[in-house]
Image (cartoon, helix red, strand yellow):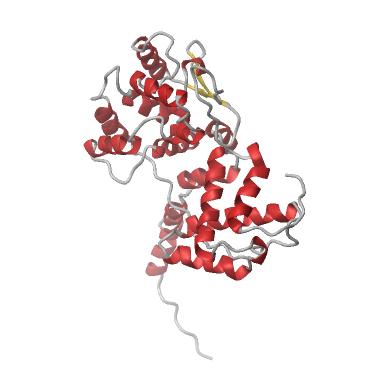
Length: 344
């Protein structure tokens, strides 16, 4: 992050130089997103000298992305990431000013918070519990854990038995070091947090642990898949991104199969986390407490869930409009005799 003297570089060189100087100050997943956004920018404006980038280039990039079918939210994210490269260049005294400083970020409407209804949860549990085999994923326990703890998919798939305190009925979300038994993995937003487990979850986890090989570290990674990953690690073919995206093969497709069996549409595994957070808020847990349990770094993210469960404005307005006082006023108005007119 030290200051550098300005010199000519193509955008592709500027991209790699910036990421190299940033080093490990950002996550691997963030690095991948930033590189992807800048490459998209280069594909549209050309691999020009970074010092020749102008606001018009950013506007062209924005419009071409929208015309290409990207959502406004996706384009806004890409623009913020590309702008960040030039902000760093200003900080490093490579540029006097960010050429995209005044770019208009597209606006979009936040999507509705999608959650599972109680009946959908029952049907889903019936569907996932049909597949119980010690050599496959314990989908029943995985689904229950997501719905009870609100943990993200990556957090659950990188969960080890050391993270679970059976006596206190707690699960701790911890980063993982690169060891002989575990691969490196970091938590999104916060360093670590503790979450409660119900009696049912503890009982199911104890039974699941008994069915696993002795000394086996991961809770939800099947033994066969674990051995495969270990082979990939020994060959140098396992990256940090893989610890987030490839712990289980075809995860999304397999979970969608259960949703179809349960006759549930337009839902995802991540919606189990959204359901847990909404349930906590609806049960009276404060927003700041839910923020801590969820591991959100930004309060606005938690507040979005609060608004989703607290937005009863329409119902309250209807109650007021059809309330007793207004009804009496209307009744009195209709029944009141017309007063005789007076003449001068």
